[in-house]
Image 1: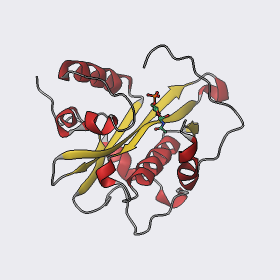
Image 2: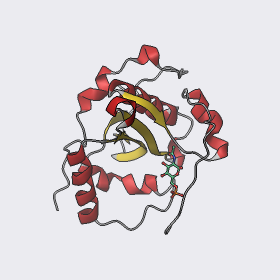
Image 3: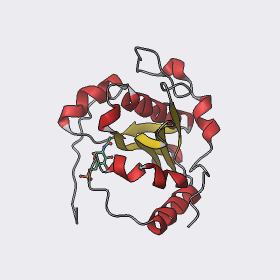
Length: 184
Ligand code: 16G
């Protein structure tokens, strides 16, 4: 099975963000184009399946025993819809994914047929914590959602992560997150 380097979305989208409007600050300074030594921030590609992408996801929740075929099918679906923006940070020395986050854009009739952004599946590998990568990924996707004309962007998180997302410019909502769970 060919797992190639085709990106899930156009990488140039990440180069055209307005960082002057970002709520986050970085010390020491890092950016999407310079995330740190031997690190690259870019869209997910199929070859990342062999660079430990699922190993990183499994630090967030049950990622499952996914085959290359299942991964490819899902990747192609996401690419075709054009509504999924999965970003990764790769340690180029190790050829391993060390962090990831997803922006999903949801189409609405309300707000004059607007789009809503959702931040999902934010995870930084435990061996790479403390490098501001989570904040960098969330800030990147937040700016991207603005650029894509989303009228708002939301996320769900554990109570202990509220302070982290506040540093990225998010405020707790007066609405409550509810769910109906069918399986784990
Ligand atoms: C967190 C994630 C959510 C992810 C879920 C997985 C963020 C901001 N939130 O809520 O995106 O899908 O955990 O947990 O990353 P689950 O397996 O219990 O659904």
